Length: 318
Length: 307
Image 1 (cartoon, rainbow over the protein chains, first blue to last red):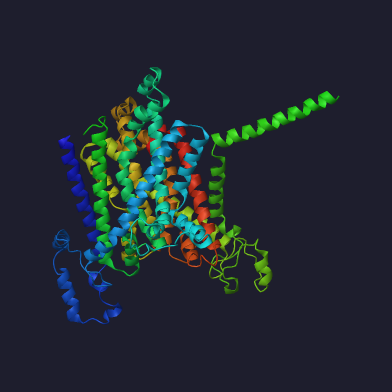
Image 2 (cartoon, chains in turn blue, green):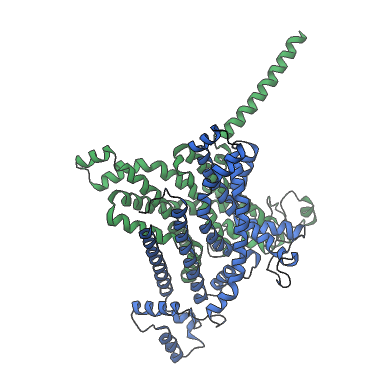
């Protein structure tokens, strides 16, 4: 077990390093990074300034040294300055990450409390109306493009019915759970959560079906355990393993998926920031966002593997 | 006389109920409706120039945001708009139906090329990893792990800053996002296949590694490849639409469905049709592909249920 943990940890570090190399190489592939600061034709910047930028970026050294310098700065928490606002990227990220985390975690919770119970119901009532409804819900969730779903929800609930705000996060002052603040969360959270809930539902359903077919459940039934006890005590606890283990991955995919949803709802988070950075060619900001997500993603995958090994003793640590 | 006629009519009724039950049975057993949708997509894509009622790029500012044809009131009020736009026109008066039809062609091309590229890469790597084992396997599997760790959408954003949005870039990105899905499953499959006697016999009789891989192992993993490929296509189409919607996919004015939704969004309050119809098209196609994929998986390879 310990060997397995060390091995996985080592690969996690390796993944992060590989990702930084890819990001770094991409940033150098873009051509002379100094051109990002200079206007087309070199207008508005003198030769000396141009060279000074080059020196501050370490462009006169070999590529591997440049990578070392770049990595060293990142490790010190210096992600550079935004080209557009000339403010430190770390500060910009710090301002935006709260909104993204709120949205991601809210959708995560919503997806879990909808997807897992529906999956159990769908498996227990296999072939009945509930099963068809549940699977229909999953099929829709995985086939509807979430940006389109988001726009449709705005069209219906904001433009048509006028029940909910069509975007932004509102002012978020006063009591945090008042309707005044919460109403801004309804549409983004629901549209983001649907796909994830569909994933939960499918995984829970297939795990539950597998467990219900197993011998110990038949034995429990045979010795006269009540139906409810069989489902919730014997079957559900074991069927919970797969959805539990994918939940970390789902959370990170929700955070990435937030890029699209945040764009639709003008949500002031990281995803929105990334898309705006693309429009403005703001490379340092985008690099920072990508690195942040890669690290999140790798750590989540690591935790998932650990969770799998801890929860399910049948997994071999090889 | 009366008695017989009554019995005939009940028998007819009975037959009718039987028939509808049979149709329902067939619809549940076979993916008829998804099949029709996918066939329609393929045919529309191939014959787009013949099917499209209008030029996909032709603008008509008089018909700006013209509603779908069933809103006859609008067309009566605007007699100078001579054409009737079946699904309406967008913010510069382009025919939405024609653009959706050409958009089908784009989705088809993007999905096919990126899927085949990713499939070839993934299957080759998966077979090699499973067959050769050792360092090659270790290298390939670690590469797959690392690649999994990179959030695809953000990679697309970075690539767009560097290379600028283009059709080729979308293809490359989607192909690069597809191959890892094949590697893991194909490798697992190959691991069990290569221990079988017929592979050992092939080796004894002097078959080369390449021959064993492509002649003896590839047919064995074929079902898995088909199932994963069908399940992936829908996701590829969704991914392409998301990229195009964010403005980092297929560049406007090409009528990719995602682009159409993004363009229609600005005028959402004035006109819902430029946004709604392309979305419905994406939804129908992806839903049909997913449905067919599930069906194929249950038929060919139920062990892949976790996918």
